Image (tube, rainbow, N blue to C red; front, side, top):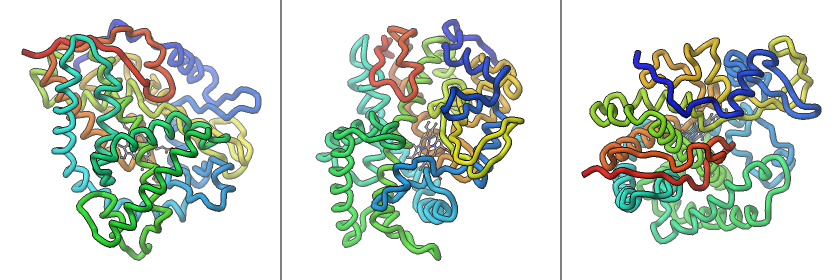
Length: 387
Ligand code: HEM
């Protein structure tokens, strides 16, 4: 096993706090707040036991008669139906077919990104890559790309309020514009199918029926919400590791077959989807703590992934860690539908860095944006371009 302790990997404050919770208060909450679930076994149990821990977390959305809930926030049987239909189009073959467009996108972004000694990792590479990949899968034409990115940014930046409070005017407007855009595309594709994921989704028919326009629209939104910022965070996480362990960058440059294990350990160590949300479906007990029906819970995936009860040297980045049963993609009926795509994008993005660069470092490794809840909007990096 190759092991290293990155010099700047002194756990950020939140990791120190989570370690304290795992040790002393594995299930805890602030008065009236949601229950924080800190240990691996408990997070795993909550994610797996959908009968007790419901994904219908948003009262606002479940009360809105016009809204089709996204599958991420739906329980069976509605969830089973949507997952079965969507999985028919979102197959490993459909994902593998994206390799070429991902690699081409990386090459084209790298041409700009790697042209200076200093650049913005997020705006020039880590954010446009996943948005572009999803846009292509949804058949967004090149000319519509800028507005697609604008809608996606407006929705992302307000996601907490969209789910749990009152969404901002800007995000409502972006949502309406995007809905109108995709409803038009869906109508066109029903008449003249094309070769991309959205068109395939429209064609899927099983004993579960077909996806309605509302469900298709919901799925376009879900891909944006679930697939973009997380993948951006993964690329930022990989770059943080390269900053901390430049010798690992050199090693991967010589040995590309080690990249997949490196991606897995980055998913564990810098988990992009830090915390998710559930609601207790009945009065129950979790690890000795009584939880009342209706209470919200926060299964803290990033904390579970650093649980020293499960991972040897949990606060050390071990590039070829094995086994590595991290929970970065969740577990159970809602486990990440895009995990294969995210791994593929992560691998190709890292390979592209290894191809074009001799090294990459953060300008400010203490930037609080690195440990914020979502992906950062901007991270300055210094690059050493490959000859
Ligand atoms: C590194 C990148 C990613 C990470 C860490 C990640 C993580 C997750 C996690 C933890 C969940 C489960 C949440 C829960 O149970 O509450 C989830 C669900 C989901 N993810 Fe991802 N995700 C990533 C990328 C993607 C991509 C690229 C896509 C698609 C383009 C995607 C699509 C989805 C969908 C559709 C769901 C909902 C599945 C369901 O409810 O049945 N994700 N993701």
